[in-house]
Every structure is written in structure tokens, then in C-alpha cells.
Amino acid sequence: MTDPNDSAERPTPQGMPPGGGDEAYRRQLEEIQKVDFALVELNLYLDTHPTDLQALRQFNQLAQRRQQLCYAFEMTYGPLMHFGHSFSRFPWQWPDTPWPWQV
Amino acid sequence: MWIYEKKLQYPVRVSKCDPMMAKFLREQYGGADGELSAALRYFNQRYSIPDKVIGLLTDIGTEELAHLEMIATMIFKLTKDADVEQLKASGLGAHYAAHDRALQYKDASGVPWTAAYIQAKGDPLADLYEDIAAEEKARATYQWLIDLTDDVDLQDGLKFLREREIVHSMRFREAVEIIKADREQKKIF
Amino acid sequence: MMQDGQVREWRPYVGRWDPCPPILVKRYIVPPNQYIPYQPMNWPQFSIDEALFRGTLWPGLFSPYVPSKT
Image (tube, rainbow over all chains, first blue to last red; front, side):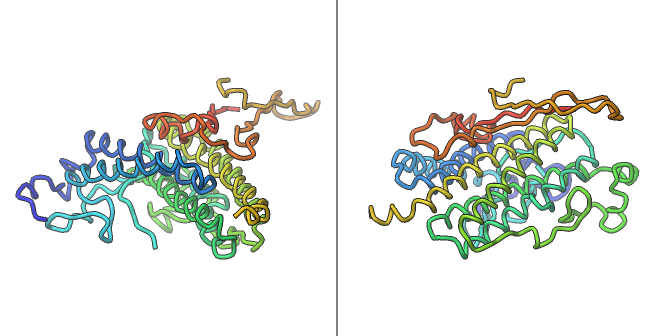
């Protein structure tokens, strides 16, 4: 899972990171936030409407779209999730800034 | 178990250095009807509620943790670069004396969070009506918080959180109907 | 106010010796969830792009809030 461009894409620990936190990062994250929000809404709705087939189909379609969006995001900015739900380049990227409250 | 996602549910923007607003926002951080109370209340009720609504309590509880992180982000941004004089003028001098700029699970008046905020009666209707009331109280709190700031970016995040209370309240209302209808549904299946 | 008919008003009693200038009208909001016993299936939705910024996927549950200074 190592990549030759690895060090170029890694945010610097001090000062403004070149990748994470900039306008492109925010924009790409916002696309994920939009899809994830619809998934939250459909999930809560399905909790009380388990037999709504159309909503269920929409949920599954959006779940697939979220996977693609997250994969693309993580290729540039590193893992969104821990504990094996995302991949990491070398060196271990999880502790890299920015954390959500720093953006 | 829970998995952390390195992103906020909603993009939080704060455009004004206003530590006094951070103090007020603590009502939704460590207050009786705040996000911490909500998350823990719903998680805790799962163990004694009919199976049909455990999924809903799990999901809304999890979303509340995302809201707790949004509130923490607002408080963090509002205090991060405030100097000691500003903190003092905002009524956060006593907080600074004990905690610097560290966040604390306290309400807007500085009362520490307590487990006594977590209601669980073990009766499904009593517990779900408690949850509906908690959502309406949190909605009202967000309205008063929106009134307390003129930062439109901060207001935007608070409006999102207020709307979420309305949706959660709707879902808990439906959960009450599910609990009430259980006897008839058994006949159908 | 642009609040989609969700605002209710009432007029508090004004005492002759009240120390502050009276607030003549008090307002509160009744969000749409109060009138929906159970959300029907196939409700209209906001677009995915819009829903996040509305705070809900369902226009039928949307409740705007206009800050009040009084």
C-alpha cells in the first residue's frame, strides 16, 4: 500500500497543511457529507418504515455512492475511518491533521 | 462497538471570535437536555425497550454523538485564540483559572453534567415520551442559542441542529405508534 | 415572518406597574411534526445537495427559524 507520491501528499505537521483543510478538501468532504446525510435520514426513516421498498432501494444506491466518494477522498487525504474500515499509506496516516474540529 | 469517522456531520463555520457564545453553547454540551445527555439516554434505554425500537435508539443516539462533536467544534473555535482578557470579559475567568481553554461537560451556568439527567423508567411509553420531550426541549434551546448570536455562519450550524431535533421527535412519535400497535401486528405475521 | 405558518402568537397581560416596556406579542413555533401521526410513504424529498443544508431530507418536516431579538 506504499505510494511513490506518498511524501508529497502528506500534510506537514506544523503550519498550514498543503492538502488537508484547504478549499478543495472542504468541497470534496462536503460531497460526502451530503450523501451521508441523506443516508442518515433514510436510515432513521427505515427504522420506522421497514417495508418501504423504494426507500430501501434508494438507501442501498446511496450507500454504494458513498463508498465511491469516500474511496476517492481517502486516496488524496488519507483514511476517514479507523480500525480497518479504511486503508492507510506509509507511514501510518490516521494521526495526520486536520481533525474535524480543526477544519 | 462504535467506529469513528474523521469528519463532521455538517460543515461547522464560525466567523466571529466570541467566547461568551462558547459559554452559552455549553448548555448543549454538558446541559440536562444537551447532546451528551441525549446520546447516553438513548443508548441506555436500549437494554430495556422492546426489540422493535432498539435500532432507532441506537441510530439516533449515534447521531447525537455527531452533534456533540459539532457543539464541541463551535466551542473550540470560539475560544481557541481568545486571549485571557477576552475570556475574563466573557465570564470565563473562573473557567480559565481551573481549566484554561479545556472543554468541560458543564451547562451554560457552569453546573457540571450529572447522570441524574439520564431518565430510564423501564416502561417503553414512559421512556419514549421522555425522549420526545427531550427533543422538544433541545429544539427550544437551539432557538434561544440562535437568538443569542448574530454570526450567521454559527446560526447556520445551530439551525441544522435544531431541525434534527424535529426529525428525531417525529421518529420517536412513530416509535410510540409501533409500541402501541404491537398486539395487532402479531396477529398479522 | 417567513416561517410557513408555523408561528403562533399570544398577548401577555400588561400590568400597569410593570417596570420594563411591555412585550406586547409573544411568539412560539409549532413545527410540522406536531400534526403528523406517522410519516406517509413516498413523501417528496429535497435533493441530496439541498437536504444537508435544510437539516432534513423531507420538506414536510422542514421548519425554518428566524432569530428574534426580543
